[in-house]
Length: 249
Image (cartoon, rainbow, N blue to C red; front, side, top):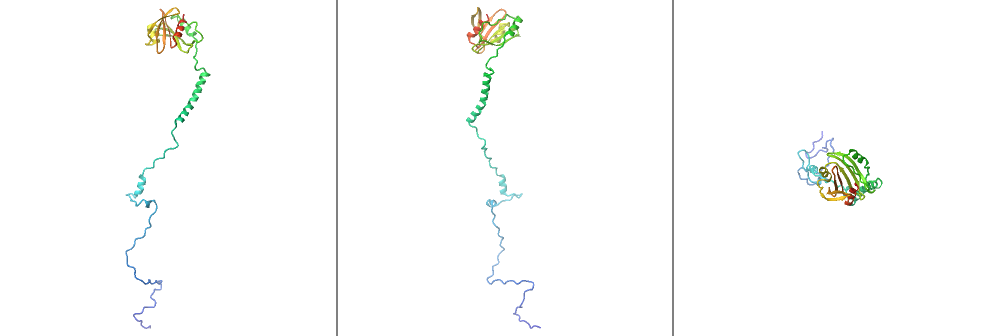
């Protein structure tokens, strides 16, 4: 039996065999007791941090996201590939269109005779008028080669029958001879229009003709006979119309 230990002595080994020894605290004043410090938060970086704090909405959407969605899209860039055409470009385009047209017109006139009047044979119309025996039929005589017949037709119309012979004068103007059994009061307004007014008498090849105005710049010579009316009318010169009327004999 071991002798009793004095009360102020500490047992030689008080550490539990299963616990590791604890280093004694360094000597010095004890740290004052403080409240629990909050955990350090690392500052955020990037665009979200630069824009400041965000405010959440009821559905969890942040104000930054809402502002980004509501911001208007940037205006579309102007189409630089389409530029306004200058007057010079328009003139060149117009010239490109006109050149083929001019070439076709020249071919039509030079090779196809587009400017030449179509000459017709008056014989069938004269034969029909003579066969109808509606009025005495006259045909111009002694006209030179410069006179070209471009129209010849005979038809029965209301109130009688009419023979029409159209000519192109040596100067390229138009003239025609109308022989008809239609009464003058009906024929003259139709052929000369309401503008036709008598201008006096003139003698041509032994016959007395009445001068008349006609439509536009035309003038006329009218021969009134018991069984027919003859009208020489056109925009030809006065001398040419007189020549044509005198050729009827």
